[in-house]
Image (cartoon, rainbow, N blue to C red):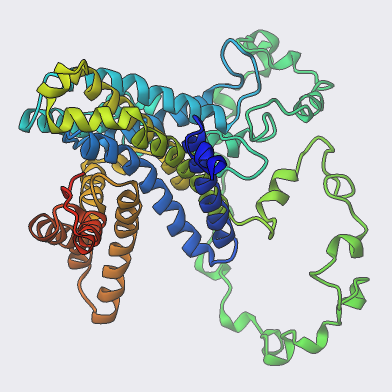
Amino acid sequence: MNNVKNLRTFPGNRIIWHAVIVGIVWLLLLVLNNNIDPLYSSYLALVAMYATAMFGMTILVGLSGQVSLGNGALMAVGGYVFALTSMNWQTVPIIGWQWNAVWSMAFAGLGGILIGGIIGGLAARLRGPYLAGLTLGLAVGVPAITNRFPELLGGENGLMLSVPYPAGGYAALDSALGSSSDSSSDGTVDPNSAVEEDQYAELDLSEFEQGADLDADLAPEDLLTDDDLLTEEDFGVGDQLTDDDLLTEEDFGVGDQLTDGDLLTDEDFGTGTDLGIDGGDLGTDLEADLDVGVGTDLGTDPAVDLTGITDAFDSGFIIERWQASMAIAVACLVAFAALNLVRGRQGRVWKAVRDDPVAAAVVGISPSGSKISAFIVSSLFAALAGAVLAQILTLVAPGAFGLGLSLSLLVGIVLGGRSSLLGAILGALLLVWLPELVDGLSGDRGWPEQITNNAPNLLYGLLVVAVVLAAPGGLTGTVRAWIDKGRGKTRSPLS
């Protein structure tokens, strides 16, 4: 009995248990992802992405008691940092290690921490509608800033990323299509590119030097003059075409016309054996039948690397499942960090400032420091979610991080439960499920497209009103209140 008690009071016991719980959930989600349709894997990826962002909303809105309408803009910060570092950096600064997507995620998180610290410092002096106005300006302003720097941030069209296949690495789509032979997908220089450049080394290009004066190499008699041009006098009357020179139907005999008997039919073609190819194996083992090798016997240069093409058509790889696995991994890591913060000392500090800032200041807690730390953590999680969204969409554009995204995050956290990490997950499920529900209803009833596009927003609004009036604590808060009522306990719906 004493051993069990000592295990419960072990200093790292809470962290160990949280790691076990998150690890089990991670494994279960991976098994689920590998056994469902790819379409549902894409939905699972979106749920994990929304949950990652709303874990930060739980800390900022639920525990710290602040209002934020700009977390979508913080996701944009993470998405753009991820895209810019992935497309432009080949090695890790200072360290010099090979660059990959993990480093881009790390730098996206650092960008979120930096912006979160700045916004948190300003927000620490504000509250209520003034704080909401600040974050609303952030949500509107950040996407607009991207349009001011089209050369760097792509303007309204944004930055297109190449599909992140398992070989790793990200690059701009135009460079992936136009210069794939010069660099590999992870940003490293392809050793075969040197061979490809050397194939032009034997060409003598000295005669085509830029700026060469071609007139100096031509003698005066080689130049054309007006006397060399043909005029009307050079053509006689007999050289002109008349109506009599045109062919008519009378010039063709009956035997010259095509009939059905002249058309080729299936009987005129033999089987694949007539071509020296086994017809039974045609389309299954073409490489063996033709006795060719990729990039060698086809007459192509051996420097041409076709591995990227074969990976793209690898039937064993499904991009939706890969994206879901990546999003689940990030969501579980963020959930582990959030769980330890919420259940630890920092979580109690945030709750104390939320409930009574004056009393918290009396016991030595800095209300402004607590608010800034909540903004930093929330911005970190939002930036990571933005980096995940960039990989799901393979695109980073202002339209993907508009005001609607910030409002959706706030609606999701209110519906699921402001003070519960489980509520963040439920809110993420609702954000993904409600639009699909509306699409299904519109398809069955033949609703116009305009109604279908606006119906999810209407449902969000109605649900928020219903939750605020009937269940202030959201789904999780209401369920816990019912459980406590059955046990004879009382608890604030926001606790």
